[in-house]
Structures are given as C-alpha cells and as structure tokens.
Amino acid sequence: MEILIITGPPYSGKGTQCEILKKELKFEHISTGDRCRLEKQNETEIGRIMCEYEEKGDLVPDSIMKNLFSKILDENISNKGIILDGYPRTNAQVNDLLELIESKDLKIGKVININVPKLELLKRAKKRAETSDRKDDKDAEIHIKRIEVFEDSTRPAIEYMKYKLNVLTFDGLGTIDEITNRVKASL
Image (cartoon, rainbow, N blue to C red; front, side, top):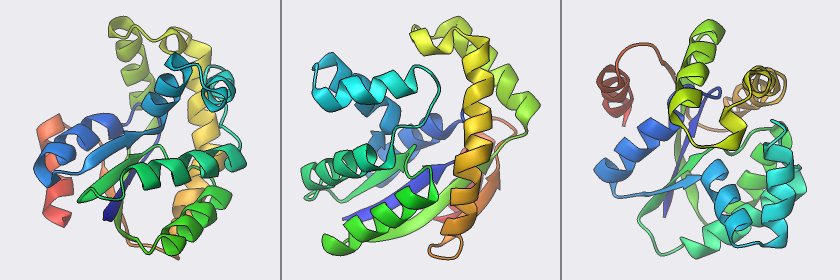
C-alpha cells in the first residue's frame, strides 16, 4: 500500500483535492476530521477525546493520534493506497507516522503541501460556515485559532518533513481544476 499525504492550512482545499485524487488514483481518503466525527458518532472513547480537542480548534494529543493511525493503517492494509488528510500535524506526529510506516513495511510516496495566504483562508472559512452543517465551522474565532495552530504546529512539521520525505508545495489559489492540474502534474 502506498501513502500520499495532503497537507496545508485549514480551508486550503485539502479535502476537495483528496476527493479528486481518491477517484483518480483509486486510493482511500483518510480525513482526520471525518474519522473523528465517525468515532464520535459511534460513541467510542477515542472519538469522545478527539472531538473535545477538535471542537475547540486544538490539536489532538500525539499519543492518541498515533493509536488511531495505527488502527487506520491496519484497516486499510489491503488497499492500493491511502491519502492522509490532516495528519501528521506536528513534528512528533511525523516521527510517529514514520515509525508506524516502517513497522508495517509501508512507504510514503509524496507529500502534497497546498499553500494559501491567510486572508484567503479566512474568506474560505466564512464561505464554508455558510454552507456547512458542522458546529465547529460556525465560530469565526475557531477559524482564526485553527489557522494559528497550523502556523504554530503544522507549518514547522511540514518543514521538518522536507528533511525526511518528498514534499511538493503548490499554490492553492485559483479554481479547483487549476489546483488539481498542478497537483496531478507532479504525480
């Protein structure tokens, strides 16, 4: 099984690009946020803990994420590949993921980093809040906090990944098709 990582700030279009690539590559799309909501819906202990953090805009502790991703990898081991959306988000999570990958004799193909300026992210967050039924999308303060958490924790993790993995950064401005074409050209 091959692993593709899609990263970037909140509201950068990661989920949209993941869904497009899922169809093209025939990979499974693993969204941290969606998995958190599923775990919560199923009333699992890990789901309850994860969502407490997510609903405040905070990152879930690394140890919980490592356990969840070990489970996710085991569940998908027979698939052609998976696209990770929203993980890893910290340097520790990068190391945890690399350790899990090695222990399961898997490989990470590429890391796609979608770069979008903060003002555009805030515009997209507001638009998503108007169309989304997610409780956490309704609060503008959470939008700002998510972007700040990204800058403080995830941007350094992306920089750290550049020393360990093949990280490709793309401009996330433009139409969905334009962004998709940029990403697909690299694959």
